[in-house]
Image 1 (cartoon, rainbow, N blue to C red):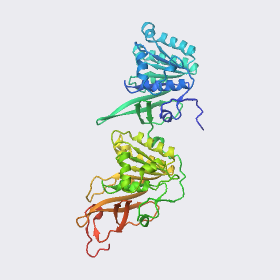
Image 2 (image 1 turned 135 degrees about the vertical axis):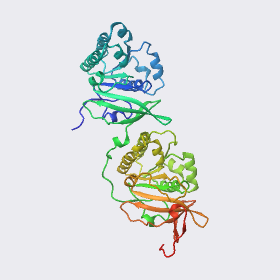
Image 3 (image 1 turned 45 degrees about the horizontal axis):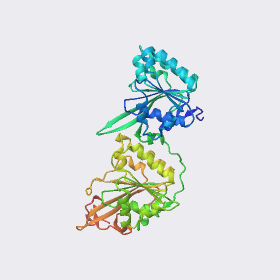
Image 4 (image 1 turned 30 degrees about the vertical axis):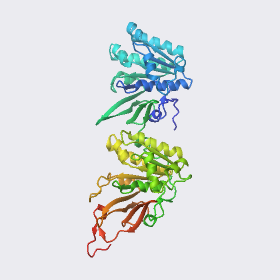
Length: 484
């Protein structure tokens, strides 16, 4: 059965997704968080969105100062529209009423204002002050219940804002239909803002913490990828076809290209040729198969220069609309923001070829780190569902050494194909070596092959014979009597 509840469009990117459709029309919510968490911005973003839709908003404060300070704070934000102040949104202070007459008078004043303004949305900024003015829990409960009752009678949605860290058993929580909490977590030297729906009466909501940012446009919420995409949007995959890679000599090893809608992980240390491999893959983009480079290391200018050195004209592909380059510095990224940015770009252009250079950028952004496997599982499942053939790199820590570790024990179940690029010393010369470790649902050649980087990109050479240990980075002649 579908959701038949009337909903309010919040205008806050991601919030309606977390609330499984938006705020329920006529319900009451508490928005709580410490000072600076973004409660006032969130509430005003909703208010100005509703006003733009022709609805009436009553914004009530318990502040001693005028509203000019509030307008100064909001004016730089993209959603703020001065023309709506007093003409769609009415700002009212009940500080003096509370101070001189008490909570009962505040309720009566707001009842009259709701009726006079014909308000569709009431925002009460100052529940903490009302709580302090109350004589006890019963007074708080009575205040919230009476105000909520008057609003519901007028089909008016209510948002109570508070900076108090009130718990689930508080009288306020028991009376309202929903509780939205804004918080901030410090991890090392960085902090991450998070939103959580602690209560949602009469409607589902996506549980857990969801990262958000405050920018010039207001709040943007990024629902957790592994929650919002717990199941991919499509489970009907195309018949097994092959996607050309653009690397000479690779077809005899794995067949004519990568399996369509598959995910390939290319592991190797720095300098082994991973990015060049990806550039050859992107160079096969067409109007029918647009491509995306989603990277953390190379700026667009550096990537274009590297492409020219291996015969891939990145600038021409971008200009022709066959390729988009999205670069995010490897600094302070939010894991879910990265995922949503990637998927938005894929859907916007119908991307069929994706090169992620490299997955370590997602690992660095993971807070907490333990959620990375579930996150990547959901992300790669959705990429398959969208018909994207994905190539991703993983930077190995050691240039040489016998220890070759999987990024995570569960990675082998997430990816379809696994390639290893390695540099090895042979006869006092460094040589690049390719090993194909896994190609799902397909036969492949497991032997080692030399790799060279030419003016046309990566090229696969002869099979490496007569040596052992090449995959560790220190090759030596094969033992006598062993078959090579």
